[in-house]
Length: 394
Image 1 (cartoon, rainbow, N blue to C red):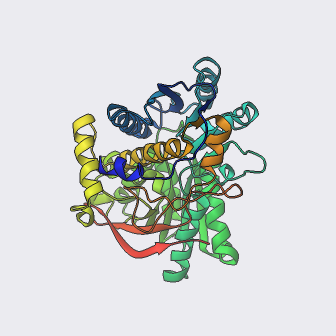
Image 2: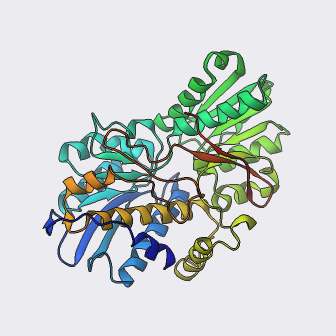
């Protein structure tokens, strides 16, 4: 693979062969929990894409002769199940580290446990700001751009283009949703009380968000900030359209997948949505001749023919897997948990093949946030079309 070859050129930490649990001369064992079932099952696409990428790397000989044994367990987006599955991975399967676990509530449930056990808890599929806390939780690191960063980008755009907006906010009633809400209000600053005219929350167990959308519409809002996971993103987009509400609609990146969110809602109902993101959209004509994108689509069609290769969740999982391989190569033969964290906190301007050019990954021992920049896109009925260039809320 061109992407694999490019990542293979990275500098490798020089160290004598030194292993912790989960590693041998022929194998590196890593694990995760993933919602393959339950209310957030659409996010299971992430784990499936990661598994395929690791298989491709293994078929090419692995990493310095070691194959990746990837153990991905279904937690159903249930924090109690996440705890059970994580204990199994750490204490029974004895993985070297955890990678890519999905969900703010799920990861919150194991946050203290993995740090007490000193198990690297890396590249979480959650943008909660709490993952960037090296002082108190030095073994945990997120992957997604901070929800507060992303929400701040929307707030900056509204202040610049709609200074007298009347904003309604729908959010999931947990740490994930509240983090977006806080970042949004913080960036609006003194304007928040004037601009935000209505808020409504939902629970992950709710069957619909119909009543919330009706309430928000009745507020007279002309701008809608939609903070939802995929299932509820679909429901909110559809209901807003069907009720005749036509606000300027900002959709969080968690629910930006064309395949699993916008298509079920109805593509015509999603026209005009605005979203901040950071990865290439394989369905966009912009990337039609991009070598990395063409390779990604071809490999997805070969290994996961039942999945839409244009699904942003697949791109996300692919990129997390690529960064994991980058990290393991950077560790060299020092495959200890201490060195995994040392290398994870010393990533330097890594350009992942499926990331938007100009957006890179960097970390330091005092700053675990991988991204500080995103780009705004608007849905045109077929694709997410870029506009306005790169944005940062900093």
